[in-house]
Amino acid sequence: TASAWDRAMHQATSILQTYHDKYPLRFGMPVQEFRVRMNLDPKWAGPFIEKAVEQSRLNHVDNLISNPSHKPKLTKQQQVGVEKLLRQFEKQPYNTPSRKEILQVLDEEQLHYLLSVKELVALNNDVFLSGTVFARSLEILREAFRERETLTVAEVRDLFNTSRKYALALMEFLDAEGITIREGDFRRLSS
Image (cartoon, rainbow, N blue to C red):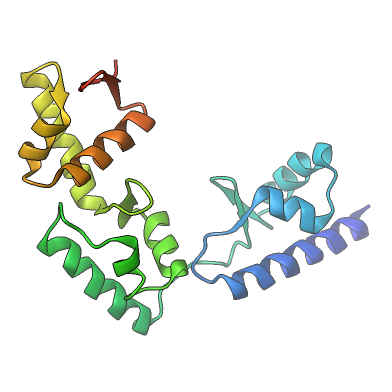
């Protein structure tokens, strides 16, 4: 009924607002968590969310649910820390701070936010690149693959004038994303 729907929407809004208040830098609550907190039967969760989105009562993007009014934003103080960190990434684009060093400047939520907005890219749990350096790295690698069919980690290391740690992390990340394919010691672009 309309009244039951309104109660459900009020409950959903309230649950999400509590989540947004606790995690202001997250874009939304994972769908599965939302379904559990709403006590939605799995077969009804999809239609429920679709209808709520259709009515502009909820947002559903990248498997996250949020209230339409929620917009993650850094505070001025957080922005100062982020800018300080990003300057470190600019100074040495292929020798960037580790997770431990990042967390001396930011907290986990701020790091999660930077990853969500693609200011940073986590190549693995401890190696990060700025989003712009990562995009530029892809262009450089594509150009290198046009010149020669395969590359080794050592060649990638030399291409970016970095250490094996960063070159290997980059290539393993690209392998996992399906951008490159590993064949023994060599990588090639996937078709």
